[in-house]
Image (tube, rainbow, N blue to C red; front, side, top):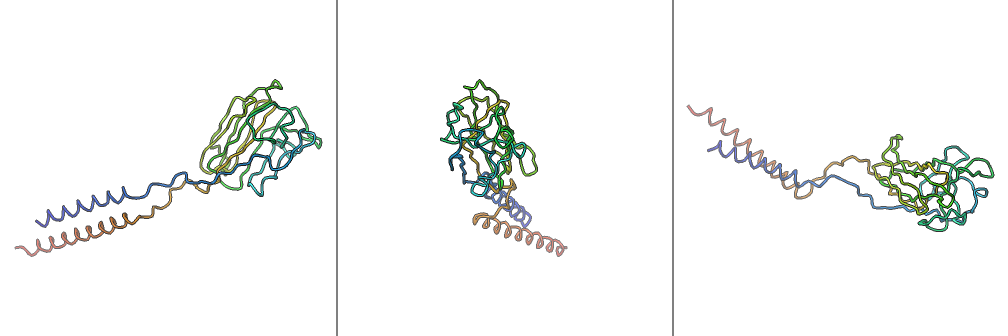
Length: 240
């Protein structure tokens, strides 16, 4: 009889363990809610590369984004749409512009690729991209994002047109992205990114009240089972 009771207690303990595991909260996923939007329209911009300089740290303090060109004097410039690239789909009036046939008055050229470095990790980065079709231009525009060690986390590419299209990469811990293009001209605007401290590690599971109740019940059942086993052994020794 004691043996059957012990088996019953152990079976109940096993079922309690299964219930406790099922009642645990789910693993943490993508839970970052803040969305940052940089439309590049904060200040008036020139409408000519000759009157502009490569964008650099202008948005670092407020937006946590630094723009880095392929060389210190190179990279895209924030221009007014009055430059006449004939694009649509951007937020007026400014955008990030490139033209590898142009030069800056102080030296250097508005050429790519352009690196965007973020002050912290991000979960997703998007930007709208296009080119000057009315200039007879064509090509592919790409957004590639990287982790803190410079390993690629993903790339998105489009065939460029005068209507800006969205490029986007979603991955855990994006620290930088690169804008590149095979065309002569390129226009990028309306950067969207989701700052996120999630390092991709599953946090320790904190038991809920229901889980604590099941754990306590499991402990009691295990103690009862051990008690039954101990008494059963003692009785068997005393029997002739």
